[in-house]
Length: 389
Image 1: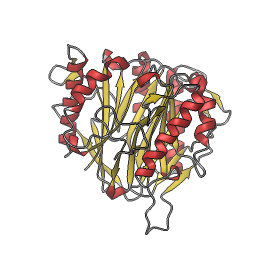
Image 2: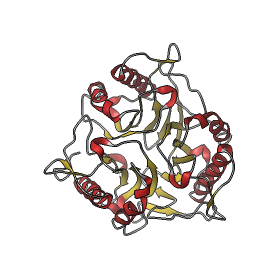
Image 3: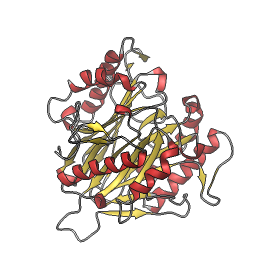
């Protein structure tokens, strides 16, 4: 799906992908590029955010949706000091319960942008009298301080999108004291409270994004994180960001299934790297028929070691790893509706595009591309994806 009123897609991605069966629309990350002149909007972050929101509006319009249909967003900032100004503009676009959200600071965005926003929308069914989306609130989780909901429960497909949680004590509103283990414990308890309020549990979680201030904390975080998944752990992406809100060392967001949908089980492929932690290579969802694939880095599944070579070779390995998991889950790249490309250097994007684009012979998926602080095992690229079966 493309809109003439949004910036032209430069690379192998679509402005949005709509999944007809579930009325779900995956929106590519938008930056502050003016669509007619194809140049980044000059000025402060307020003007850039306004342009980003107008670009998203154009894509939503093309999909027959509105901001009232948006259930989840991710805001990528190059400076968290811009957070308050971005919120002022962003909040004006949501009249009703705002979507779930995660906000993180990245190292860089395409074209020197200061803000990028991606999202997911679910269109209301004309024949349905029930609301397509319901805000979830729990007093056992930190109250929302800004235009977002703790979670959004989606009737179509029975998904719950949980906002990024940081280690805030809901009783005091303050960041918890202690090491990263204590911070992770608080984050998981906050996530648990929101899941419980939506009628879900950790057993219903299909995908998490774990944002860290320091990948050196990875082992300690895994120890705490793993205790909350007594059954099959969800798909996962783990990244080091440039900074997290309020100086937190960890932030976790997730997607869970409830109601008429359920996890179809873990997807495992011997042609993809063996899991090293509390995650699955992929998790299927039925009957909504989605497959959530964990972030893949350029590790050779035969040796368990990162591949040598330039970023083109690394991207090739990542795509082959994704292909293996997709095929094990009964999907292919033609079924992929959304990807996120995390890079160690935004200057690598052109080379990554050359390789990435070869894997999408038909309509390419929606996409966001950001430079993070660091990737596991010194990788230069990590990619996760969602497929609609």
